[in-house]
Image 1: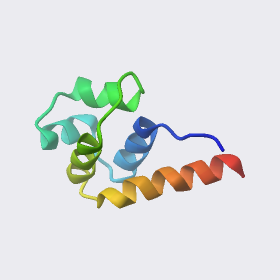
Image 2: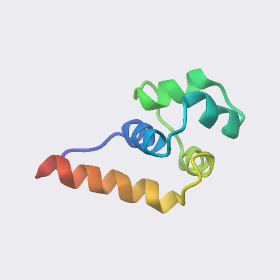
Image 3: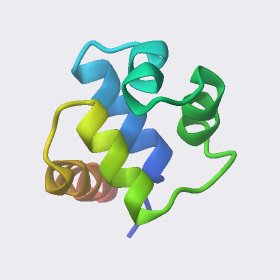
Length: 77
């Protein structure tokens, strides 16, 4: 089973929610460059940071995980 990187899932959800990296960063009180690094897989994130991303994108954290699992299943099919 192919692994779906967290950053790719965050990027896909962000785009689906029609948010810019800057908007997400502002909501997280962070820098756009940090969001960019996460999305590109240049740095990992903690579980707490994943929750902060979910909150910034106004989704429940479990939906981010569900999205990652769905993408993983699609990549296998």
